[in-house]
Image 1 (cartoon, rainbow, N blue to C red):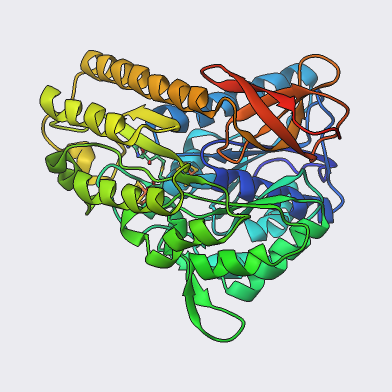
Image 2: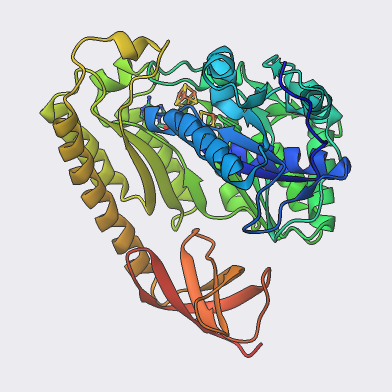
Length: 446
Ligand code: SAH
Ligand code: SF4
Ligand code: F3S
């Protein structure tokens, strides 16, 4: 038992990792809001801190313990300890260890169990520590409150979990098996988000294109069917989805990119590596060639589509020549954006005990060379966009008054000047390109 605590009045949720964690963080905030607990004002200590953690790489997981240490230290200085809850994928994977190693933690709650946070909080206030890492995925969504007002761009988790078991990855263990949320629930949640001010919705899933369900007429449909239905919502202007797996791609989803105006010309399709032996050792179940064929088909229906991906360098046993195949595929695809990582051995995954673990300096060298190549293509993509006229959705204010930052259909950051507001969709002509952003000028009088 810990000493009883006063019920918290304010909270702070810190989300790490992928966008699905951001979504979960928002839903936890909504749950607390329903209980009359308010977000802590900027710069002030919160009574309840939720660390919504990521387990994907070693460094991400270690952050949890240093964050807990920092919170305890700050609490000592302020003379008042916050209630600490650890949520997310580290909670799922290492719940017991957290409870042992960090006595300051009151709650450990996994990504499929956070709808039970209010009851856990009641226990914690009584001084009892609470752990819940069950995986009743659908029950969670049914138990969550209505969506609340957010910015113009919203996330909507449609699919969770992963059955792919890439040999390096913890996600199948932390998020469980693939499940799809039912079609009517998703249409209803999207409608609520739009009523609350969203103009753009990004559909989320660890394998979002594995989503399947029954539409309003009882027909079996994949993600394309859901996208077509969401596109009929008035006031929703843009639809995106992430992350896709090459093996779950179907004809209808590819075709949707040529049919649905609201579906943005952007595809995040990780390949991880360009060499077939490495892809096999990773258990990706696709080859470099089959991946390239999919990209070709997207480009056939939507020639301007911006492509992005994820890469891992230094997978166990990767030779210099095999790494160069990764550079080659990067040159073939000419990605508009990318995420690249050094391989990080994760406890419990098959790759962690494979022979031929790569030395840190070799990994660092490969990552640096890969990133230089990716940056080159990103800059080239931006430069090739100069002269195009497109809509930009404002998501932030710029550095100077009257300056705005937003996203192009191709997810590039674009800044421009004028008399606007966050959430506005503005027609701009892309005038100058930098490596990470573009300058736009207003093409038509507002
Ligand atoms: N489900 C998605 C994303 C998974 S996690 C997909 O399959 O694409 C996001 C990215 O983290 C992965 O695409 C991969 O590039 C990277 N990643 C996953 N496990 C990793 C590990 N052990 N070491 C380094 N990078 C990793
Ligand atoms: Fe991880 Fe592979 Fe599943 Fe993506 S597809 S979440 S990389 S196991
Ligand atoms: Fe991290 Fe879990 Fe997402 S491990 S990347 S937060 S699914």
